[in-house]
Image (cartoon, rainbow, N blue to C red; front, top):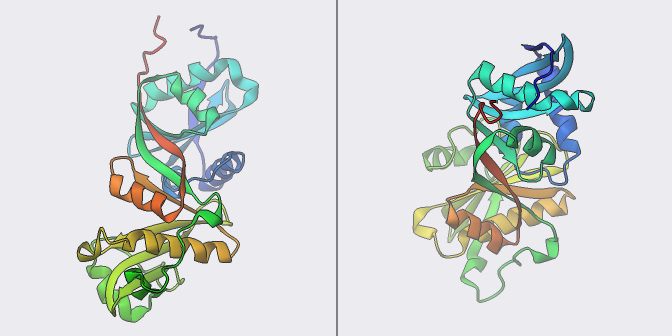
Length: 271
């Protein structure tokens, strides 16, 4: 590639600029995706891209992974040169990119020598496709999903799911699934970090209740609750977690895309 005689450097960026740039970029995408990648983009270290000492874009790196890279249209001819400089400067060889994010796929994908799936992304596209509530005669009719309270904290912290409920529990974001009075699982309804109208669903099923339809029933119930509040339910799962993928699809969510993991080569355009 032609390397133009410009100076490419990287400066500090505050969290306000970081959130504004990340939020503005996501607002133009067709799907919100779950909260995983936006959280990484908001928690990572931001670096302002400077071309001839003028702001030209923003990159975000977390745990040595490139999470976000958006450059201004006015500097289009320098984009590959700027990304090449960033990879060399920060020693990054991995990136996460949404499959429907053409801008970042173009910028970062130029340097990919390998592309793989990292996580699948799901959304409720049609509420009519959600699994219906169990009716009479269905064993799952005895499954009840109710808001968790402080009295449920010993169970929640003892379950092999997440470590910290200090924000979720008081905010009413946790549900307990009970079958015949016994805790059978947990449902989460977490606000998306960037979209006010989107709720990120999560689910855990106790081992003794797995493969009996509990998981898909919990997800479907959480999704129906979200839809009734006129919000959009989304979810995600690791690409190798076939059980979670099948559970989400059986509940009525649709896979709308993938978080790609790119292995980057800074010498891709070396002459």
